Length: 116
Image (cartoon, rainbow, N blue to C red):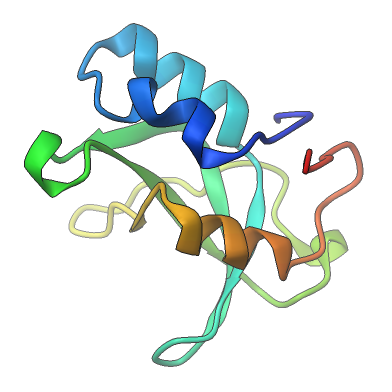
């Protein structure tokens, strides 16, 4: 799990770089971070620590792949990433200012610290 998160402007070169090295650096910075999405049905999500998804530069570059969490309390979260089920590869979110605002609205698990 990551120990910090920095502002999105610092990650712009990584977000638009399709290399696996960029993916690994983004996973290190974002993996394990929780956020709250109040759209649709709402819910708490945790960014997976094993992979992101490349959408292409025109569609925003790398997106985080997330698992839905049971509730707002990090103590109720499963111990690791959910097992992938055929046809359900998780929920994807663009790495942008909106994601960072949703991250700010959620309680983080012990050991996860968000840098301002």
